[in-house]
Length: 320
Image (cartoon, rainbow, N blue to C red):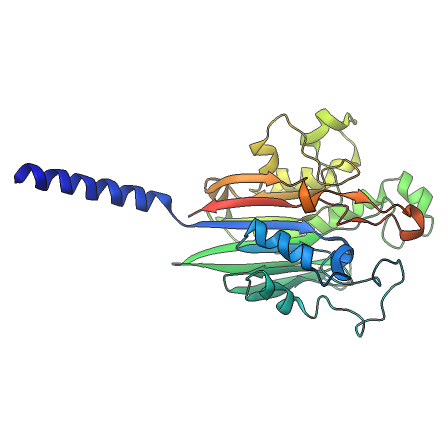
């Protein structure tokens, strides 16, 4: 009898160990969806919704999350009366199972939006200080309640996209001087100083900073082959040298180049703190199926739009 009791106790202990070891998993999907998923808006976003349902994320972070052009054209919409997004993200998100929606960063028509199965609250929206600093597309700092006192800090951003500087008089000369790179560097410095830079001990907290940085990283220079002091590296050199953030894709795929755009650059990055990095079990850029990118055949007359986007999605899974 004592032997049977021992065996039963051992099995129960083993079961509890396995059950507790599974933990809670949270999947995050990030994607720059190009002009509010212009590709699928004429299809009532059915293919887009099916893609998100297939990925089954708990949290989505969308960049360029606003409708801007009439379906299948480069004709700008009348705003806001002709726009479906961002005003109806709550309706769209419910279709793939998310009940919480937050317009996180918005200064113009290129906002970032977070949708989630977990409650979200805004900590800070960043557009600049009103004088010296401008964050052209806006950025945001949100907090997501994962339950049991666990909170995920999410910083979303979309930096200046051009080679020339903001409001440059001579765009060609400005581009040659790398003024666009330097302007992006001021944006990222301000964003970091206003978010993770305000929190002592943030490296021991769960932080994710992601978005379209419109800048390449020196950690990928084995692929690019540029001078090490190139201004093109200013944005990510600042992040890596002045914050506790780690470049997640670089950390998980050392020596491999994982492009994030059809053009072949890696400009969409996921930065995580060491505390969050320890809990991440899976990271994957997506290149196939609905996520596969293809340039519109009309090319220049359609502003070089792509289907479904000129960027690729990235997913990560956190085990709590």
